[in-house]
Length: 195
Picture: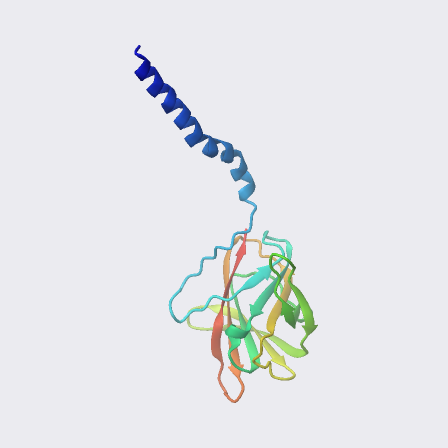
């Protein structure tokens, strides 16, 4: 075999080794990626009338006790609010009690810190089962003792409950009544993921 042909074969083997080795080395680590919490979120009915809101939950495993923070940041409110409605989907089968719901001023966690309530906001809360033409749902209404003023502070509805037995995506919607208005307006939606 001529020397040039041997040299080409050797170069091809070296090239393929360096090209394929990163893929072969990374394959065993894919099993660890499955448990990672990604920042990707799927939301249906995603058009100009639907707004995606941020949330945080402690546990995403089905049938496990969970604590969910539904965030209302300054750019989610844009006005003073007299009341807030949280629409809980019918498919989110979990017992929700008044004593396990709170409303607070919150520090949203991130890379350097964790999410935590800074100050509880006194409010009356009411849960009702309601039906519309399309579906039935539960409505959690929060009446703060004083209006939630538009400021740079972030607020959160904190829900402590047992996760549903079925995994899936659960879309919660929020409505707020601005000061000086008699009707509520849509604030946005949270899509909670249960594995």
